[in-house]
Length: 202
Image (tube, rainbow, N blue to C red; front, side, top):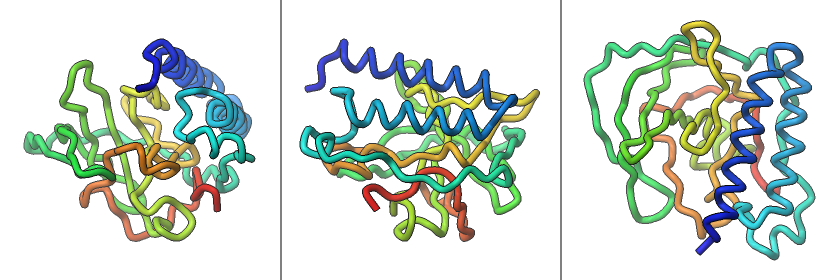
């Protein structure tokens, strides 16, 4: 089992990183994205709570991304006028995870459900799977927001910041030892979102 204090340190570093992204994104989104990439590489390469195992860390040369594209830097209001729906979302393993659907966001390429983790502490969760899945990105989809883990891009007034350049693969994309919730049917779109993290190692 991963040491609890190491995991605490990892969570703090991720939370600090996203606080820096929220502070700097409006000034220079491309620079904030470059900083996000650099810190993620540091964590993957050297932290004991990296999603990579020891052998993978030794061979690691960096995660792969699409170039920053401002066309995918979006914001949207969450429509909370939805029927309450507690659901069990399938994971990459043999289990499910409980979430509550709390709203939906409407974007130029479709709609995505927004979830709240139905567990102690909760957290907003927004996964998605697009037409790049299984091609240039992880086949199970990617995460845009996972606030229980610190992945929070913030708000723009009453709207959530949904900058797909910061989309990333779940831990199970790198190592099957991890079990992660995958994008459910309501979070799949037929367009290619060529932004954010690409498949590793590629």
